[in-house]
Length: 143
Image 1 (spheres, one colour):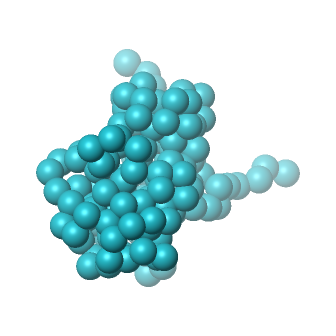
Image 2 (cartoon, one colour):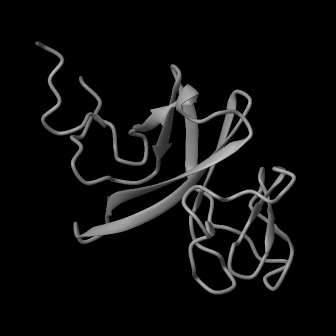
Image 3 (cartoon, one colour):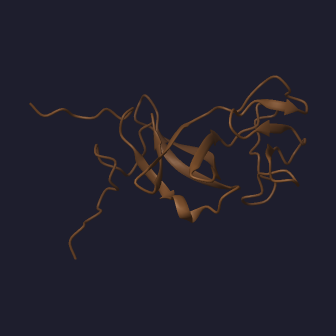
């Protein structure tokens, strides 16, 4: 009997691990399917720290704005905390907890990010444009 994966278990490749330099954060805007099958923009930030990757929804809990004040400018001057460019809130990279600023005590919404065979993947969502196996629709391995 063949088991089928649910979208909670399906890994969607966002980029290769080496596409993000260590101790850097990049933003992506993916298209997620909501519970009604409607396509919704899903801005996320992925932080690479050595061989690990962390991911959060790119939205400050204080004001609901994207964290990056300029494209892919997510980290503080020391490169050790995520920072909201609008009000300067600082977030722990590993937990997403706000440690300083107007939303201290709140946190970023984490996303399930895993490094699988050298790729940074998101799980726990259903993305538009992908089949049930997590492969991009229309992707063909034959040339």
